[in-house]
Amino acid sequence: MEQGEGGAPEPGAGIPRVDPYGFERPEDFDFVSYEEFFSRYLVILTRRAIKWSKLLKGNNGVQKSLKDYYSPEMMGLKTDQEVLGELVRKKVPAVAELIDRHGVMWTLIVSRWFICLFIDILPVETVLRIWDCLFYEGSKIIFRVALALIKQHQAFILEATNLPDVCDKFKQITRGTFVTECHSFMQKIFTEPGSLSMATVNKLRETCRAKLVAQGSTNNI
Image 1: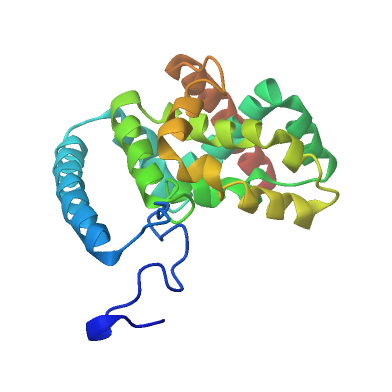
Image 2: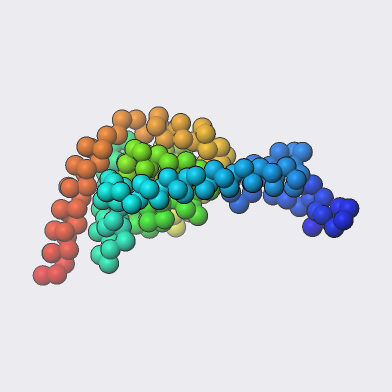
């Protein structure tokens, strides 16, 4: 990296346009303003952490919905992946047909989305906004995010011609300006998927869980 006076890096020299937190650096980027910004941003993160800590200590719906993600059987994770599959079948049928045609299991392409709650999948600021909504709106937000990503990139996904290609397309749709511009992204997750109630999600969870249990029983015979 090029050095300025006093050994400090020259503004913008060798600096990626989008930082690891998902923030786009302006043309007049300099480290001083960047450090000032993050000093303020860390205060916001601290406030969020305190709020999330209080919510997690309570008997809230997020805990109930997601606790089986991390059990030995991971039944909650398997169930919600199947729920997403059913929602895609209803709301983005062309993509569902592509998935079926190439014999792709949902666990291959979205398991990290669910189990990581989009950490290391989407930019940090976008993930924090998702988590804010997750605690207030419930676990249906996870499906809204997934559906928005799939629906927004439907044409791109449909270009896939085989299983590895499908997997690669799903990796690529978590990058780019659609996800780094967190304000517009959060608006999209409430418009792109259309109507999606918690009652609908819970009903699909019951159906998908029963199907998975039945399949497990059959496999053990």
